[in-house]
Length: 329
Ligand code: GYE
Image (cartoon, rainbow, N blue to C red; front, top):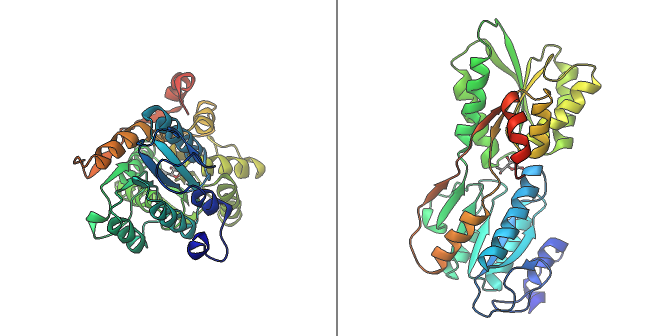
């Protein structure tokens, strides 16, 4: 039976997701939580990957929350590839899980597989990232941040801190092309800096939300643009990569070039407290408890809000020093 649904080349990831067969079965590799009890809710979770500190914290939090909630979690890591996520979702449908949760790597291209889940009567919860499907009945709810607002907050800080400057040249390190947080953080930032015409985005490219991507793109930016004042990175990891590139070019991050990022994961907050990053907009990865509550409700057939927005703050260097000891991720 497995042969029929296995495509020719199947990743270890998809295999892990395929290796358990159905509710109430013994926990398979990639499963955790309430394994034995026959009536525990089974959730199939299709994660984006392990591209950033944010993602690692999110995965850990989802796994812990599932355990606490007594939900059996089948987990797969798509290594930032949409095709892997689609395979994982299909395998969860095949296994007849009670609910599917996933964080879509990109916004487009989900309608077919989401329709398959709907036809199999398996509710889907979007967590962290959105899809751009017109048909809102393909999923029950979307739990996650307001990414446009995050970009706006980043831009507003820059406007506030560029008063009196005649020209401010910004380079932008974008997240994964086509991902909701990359699209929306770009949009929110652009909207906010309209208030200050001296601020110009002189270059903008994807660093795929990774530290190495941020470093590489920043190296190229530094080579072709002698006058960079500010880096706006769509996440901490790319900002941390940019720090490496700036230092290697003999410049001082935080002084010669200011860096603004989004996330507020531990390494980012440390760099902020150390004066290398100038401002961070928080994006919380701690979605697990809310996700499990929503899952219980949708499985019980209760209604849930269409959209659940995460509450978030921002950090200056001084605020980071105070907040760091209490941060959970
Ligand atoms: O900001 C970034 C991660 O989707 C909000 O994905 C998430 C983003 C997060 O790779 O670090």
